Image (tube, rainbow, N blue to C red; front, side, top):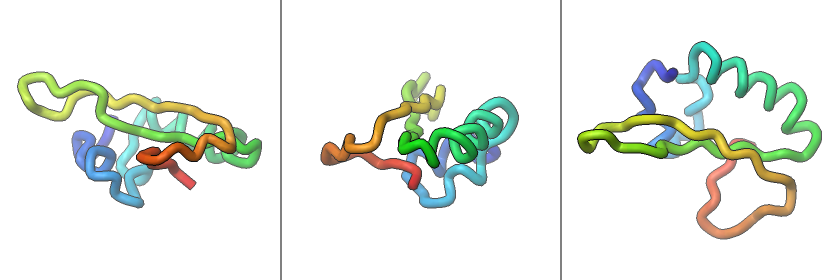
Length: 75
């Protein structure tokens, strides 16, 4: 859940994590606490557009060294 209905994530705004609420926020905080220090990277993106509107958000976890072009990560 996002306070802006996913707009910051869709626009790859640097402060997109600040818009998270509920379980999404808890997952992000767990990533910050344990995943990021262990070398993992997190990407968030809108994965559905029902009726042309922003829909579901997906979190993708990758390992360090995954620097393919076009990948926006939370560093």
